[in-house]
Length: 169
Image 1: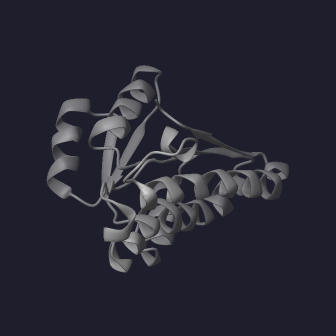
Image 2: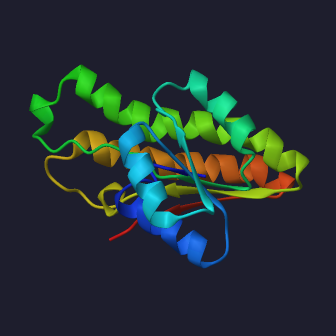
């Protein structure tokens, strides 16, 4: 399952997985984008509407999909000077990148454990590693994913669940 899989990096990841022989479930909040991606990617691709900021939906989707690989790719970007970022905007970025990824990861873990393991991949960013102006909310959320990956790797690794972060760029 790939969150934010209908466009951009998520779509490219889906194409690569399909080329490698995997079946793919695209998850995202925009049904029209999911349908367009599905029509392009073909039969081995399914899709599921999911807004990761609505963390209560994550368990239901995780059970329905029963994924052995989860790619936490869903994200939003906010580019503006830090002093102009509203509390609502900051919270929205963190809710998408951190809370949504954490909720979905927790939701898939029991199934992965029962199946003997799995893999959870977080799409981070070079913005998590370098100071870049006007992306304080995005940068801090992506940096938080690094800490999440470290902690969850230690906690879940003994169950055969691998966690990694990739910072494209």
